[in-house]
Image 1 (cartoon, one colour):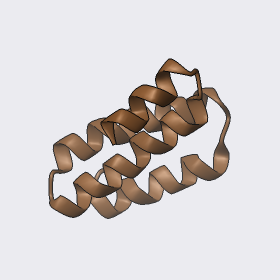
Image 2 (cartoon, helix red, strand yellow):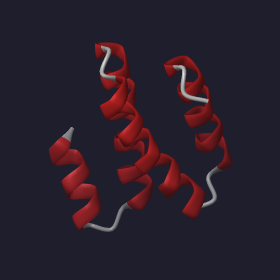
Image 3 (cartoon, rainbow, N blue to C red):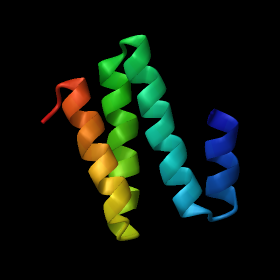
Image 4 (cartoon, helix red, strand yellow):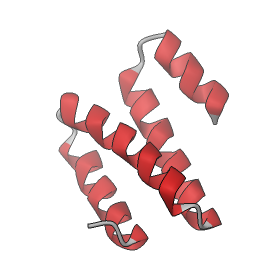
Length: 70
């Protein structure tokens, strides 16, 4: 996951980077690491907001709800 985020960042592929942060947050949430998951989700949400990606913003909000972060 880290390598995918690094490559997306290096190549300026912000949509891919945002999705990597989101997917990493999902994985961390499943493992029960809510703090780390919240940090990754925050990064993803910031990128989704900057790129005006409403569908992904909704997905992020739903993940926040599942994590108990509202």
